[in-house]
Amino acid sequence: MTVAWSFTRLDCFESCPAKYWYQYVTKRYPFVENEHTTRGNAAHSTIEARLKTKASLRTSALAVNEKTRTSIEWLEQLLLVYESLPASATHVELEVALTDQYTQCHWMAKNCRHRAKIDFLILSLDGTHALVVDWKTGRHYPAKVIDQASDYAMCVLALFPGVRHIDAQFVYLDDRSVHDYKFTFKDNPVIRETFELRAADLQASYDNNHWPVKPSDNGCRFCSANVPGGCPSGVR
Image (cartoon, rainbow, N blue to C red; front, side, top):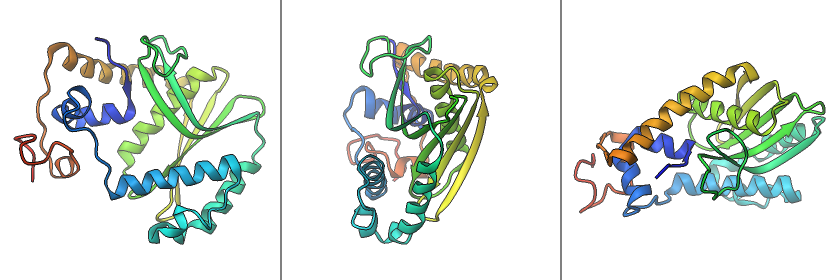
């Protein structure tokens, strides 16, 4: 089979192929939400509702959670800034599905090779600049975020070939910070090649049914297979 990859799945595979096998191939131990992912998902849903329907942040899940409650006013002002930007189009929770030729396809199409979801996308009036915004809770991990930003840039350039400049902004709600990463259309060939090589490693594991274990403290801590009777190599 030819596998479709996403940033999340590729990150899972590279952290531990066995974890990927348990979670996505056999599905014996599917991903189980924890307090961190539950809070992150609630934040995404809240901001999505605010952008689509103007729902109040002050009575949302963000107001209930102690870590994000103090960020509501700051976030509201930031959203107003984003909404004031001159734009030819905006997209909230944009689903991106691409073939191996980087043409758009249906999310579940048989020839889909890459999937991504963009939290918030703003296209400039002339269509040459794109601002991608991703909502985050928790800590900032620069290496992983730069990787994800590159994926967003690749997706935007596939969907909107007239774009020449991409700003990928990661908004961290807990500490009220914004981390900005810039790309141009000239970066796209290198980005594509890098992800294609990494996706090829994932494909090779499918082809050869080879899923080695890579135990680590942090990786095993949140692994759904790290349970009695599960992965025998998990760090407990």
